[in-house]
Each structure stands twice: as C-alpha cells, then as structure tokens.
Length: 136
Image 1 (tube, rainbow, N blue to C red):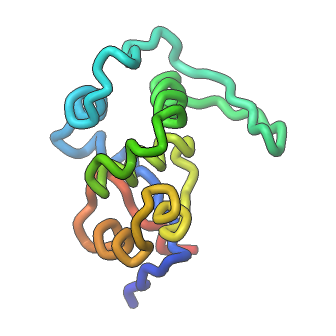
Image 2 (image 1 turned 180 degrees about the vertical axis):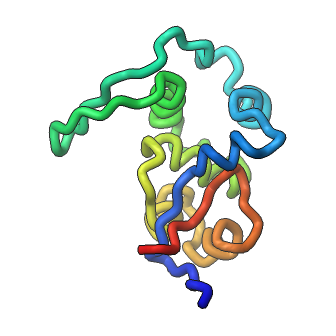
C-alpha cells in the first residue's frame, strides 16, 4: 500500500540522489541558485563539529554541508519568494541543516500553501533530491 503525503509528512534532501544523478550539487548551487562569490565551496575541512543549541549535542557534519547551511540560514526573508518553489524548498532544508521538516513547516517558511508543497514535492518525481519520509 502506498502511503499518502500530508501536511505532517516530513521532507529531507537525499544526498544519495545527487550522487546517483547526472547533476553536480556544487555546480547547481553556484549556477542555478546564483550564490557565486558569496560562498567558498572549496572548503579545506572535511568535517566540522556542530553543537545543537537546544540539546548541547555535538554532531560531526561534512564541511561542505556546514558552509552551505551557514550561507542559506542567513539569506534575506524575501529570497524564498523570489525563487522557484523547488529551489525555495531546497534552500529552506539546507538552512535547516537538512533536518526533516513537515510540509506545513516548509510552507510557512516559503510562504506558499502546504497543499502546493505536497503537490510539487510529494509526487513521484524527485526534485533536487527532496524526498518525503514515508515510513514514519
């Protein structure tokens, strides 16, 4: 039985999708999202220690992912309304350290309805590696 996506369905970026696709994540970030000179994607550090402000838990993350998260968490509020829905959802998840977010949470951040998020991101086509978590 197929599970139906709802406003409470959580989404995340599947980096394996990027690895298996013919797309390159760094090229996409530089060209499609036009971040250009604002970010250094050639980070020398393989891993970075992140401390969760709420729990104090220390997690090791990929240096590239850390730089991208830091960049996207500082974008102006109107960025997500000026870009496509797919790119907006992708950027919101990057800014959230790719911690799964519900369609309702994403909708609030991208200023679009959760039904629009579900129709676009919850269908059979995978955009930019954004997938629903259907085994909750």
